[in-house]
Amino acid sequence: MSARRSPGWVPPLVLAVALVAVWTVTAALADSAVYPGPGEALQGLQSDITDSRFLGSVGDTARVLLLSYAAAIAAGAVTGMLLGLSAFWSRATLPVVYALNSVPKIVLYPIFLLFLGIGDLSRGSFAFVSGVLPMFLIMVEATAGVRRLHLKLSASLGMSRWSLLRRIVVPSVLPSLASGMRLCFGLTLIGLLLAEMFSGSSGLGYELLRNLSLARVENIIGEVLLIGLLALVPTLALQQLETRIRNRYEVSV
Image (cartoon, rainbow, N blue to C red; front, side):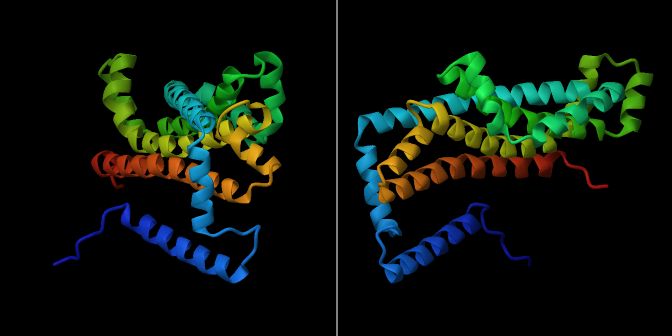
């Protein structure tokens, strides 16, 4: 009888506990003011959380992230699937998008500030672009990889484009869509934090840079822990969703 598999969240939890233990020991051995232990970091985070301004910044980041992420998933998935069905437009567009995606996004942020100004619109748009390009590329490649036999069969049956997408393309690309959703979340979050650090008046990126300017090391490490937690929980949930989708739709060849 095969051994029962542990839940997917157990290995990351074990790793996290091990890292905290190593952190505690090394901080105690170093005994340095610039290397606080977990206790000091949690105290710094607690002092921040009791501040209503900091809680407002957390809410601002969560709100803009949710909107940017949802828009990136929707736009990247839909345009990627539609373009992936056309061999001509795929060949014409992919080199440009790959080249644009290889450019460090932060060097483009002044353009967002120039046209959109300082505020949620520029930060959200930058976060959107950070996530939508990888999502688009993943969906184009996944759609282009749909079995040609299925597409030829749909053409011979005279299926409409909507029926083709609903019955053949979407079920075939769902595993790639789930992977793209997981990857896109982290990239969107990184883009948003960078934008908040450069031009924000609120948000976790702004708070991180503010603590850095005040040399509050415990608060910096505490906020890093908070950002890590806020990123880890959705990522684990998306990973579980990806596993379920792959088990249901992915066909071994």
